[in-house]
Length: 77
Image (cartoon, rainbow, N blue to C red; front, side, top):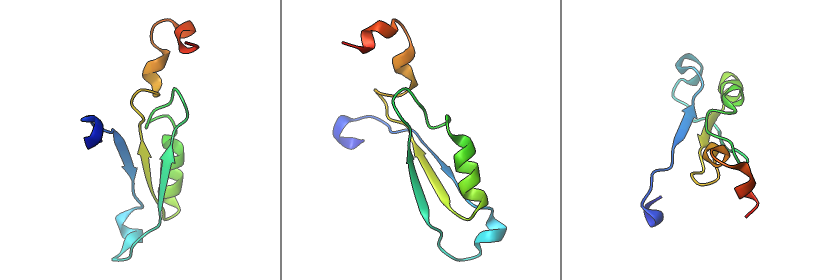
């Protein structure tokens, strides 16, 4: 994220090379909900990849799992 000068963590799940050949594959861009992470839905990334889709799971710094640290009552404010 060049505008905010910060990294955007991401994980990419790809179909097995033997199933790809030289062809392009569709891409699913997955966005976790509040308090989630790029690892929280890894089972979906593996599922998509097993069925021929690439799956990009991004992590939203600032609304990811870090918000659950400390006092959860401060989330309201």
